Amino acid sequence: MDGEVNETYITLKGHVELDRFRYLYFAVMLAAYACIVVCNLTIVYVIWTHENLHEPMYVFIAALLLNSVVFSTNIYPKLLSDFLSEKQIISYSACYLQFFLFYSLSGSEFSLLAAMAYDRYVSICKPLQYPTIMGRNTVSIFLSLAWLVPASVTGVQVILSSNIKLCRLNLDGVLCNNSIYHMYCVSSKVHIVFGALSVAFIVFFSLLFIVFTYSRILIISYRSSKEVRKKAAQTCSPHLLVLISFSCLCAFDVIIARLGSNLTKLIRLIMTLQVILYHPLFNPIIYGLKMKEISKHLRRLFSQAKVL
Image (tube, rainbow, N blue to C red; front, top):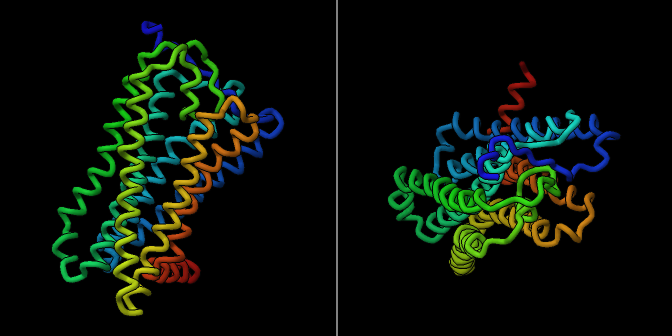
């Protein structure tokens, strides 16, 4: 098997009634991908071109939206190609690359949300120290760690997984996610332990940190003036909505891996599409509507476009 890795192809068996609805699937998902790219990059453009948005909070939002674009680009082109192909296959190496990017970028999402929580904590709880603590170097370090740490952890996991012998070449899904574990001949204890530790390190550590920071914000806001409480609600609620949304969708991915054999193909497909469709569109909508400064610049941008 090791000598034939480059010639091994995996069949994606998660599509439902593809022969009947392939063009409908293609049209809907192409429109969704276009919306994801346009909506996310529009807000990134607004943040990039307006100096009053060159603050840590908005820089982290731009990073989060770029992360969503890369996450979607890892999935949609291949998915769209499969809709129009007679055979839905992916090479062994390409499958692991998609797996790596899927979980690396998912981990980066949690890390960026943790960095945003810390930024809000310093802004609300230590406003006088905010310019000193959240300087350009600090923001750069947070951004680097948010992408490098999940990539390193996921990379080690992929290296450990790639040497495990496959007994099946059929994947019960439309992309290479946790469903790939069902193709292994035997489960590796080292792989299982490392996978659990990596999830705990990236996801649960980020969630615990976010819960701690927002708890502190809640306590400080409760003890402060009405204006401080209003500021906390305006700037923190979008982040919390995104966090809750993404956490729920990540739970779908875990359920697919653990209960995949007990779920119908249609339910697995719907749950997978929720992860790749709903959240990348949810982010720009929430930040575009809930963040006052971004919303103001977006209205100006669209009004100028109408005039032209």
